[in-house]
Length: 273
Image (cartoon, rainbow, N blue to C red):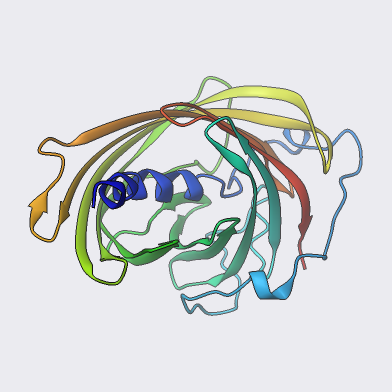
């Protein structure tokens, strides 16, 4: 059980970190995200990797429509992930559709990690884990439903300006099973504090871009109960700094995570219908 408990403790962190790769929903000036060279688009992502488990309506939404988030169902982004803490991996993100109040995304990461997330949109701003919604995560022998108890603020505003700050606060309860036998409940409180740093040139496998750099600090406190036993006895707190580079018409092209988790994600290809 010790290994299982250690794995469960990071589930809440994993959900938030996977979710953070959503393309920006900024409405800032067009010159803030224009690529300096044409990016490479690809439609070579295997269809078997894109298996949405949350149903949504395949329509568009004016609340989500902006130059930094191509809100077209079926759009995909492929990222190469590197970390000193794990083998290289690939994440394929798919926008599976538009709900009445926001977006639904489906992520597949090497190693059998799948995450379906509901996002809320309001006047171009994007909030992670829509309040009173249920998202899901599957990671090896862990299968959970993620209930968003409370969500306030937003992950990205409708416009970006250098020096601007904003935040999102989340309360999450995860319910599921380890190995199909051990009942597990995890409660997470996450505080996300972000700053828009300004424009910066960035080069990744999919092209060279003039991007908008944004830095967010995630403070995630988790309490875990397995088969009626709280373990460990005190809540565990993780702090991660996440920096994203966003490009108009494309989304996030690069992500760097430092702190309790270290990882770099770079966009290798994307396809927007």
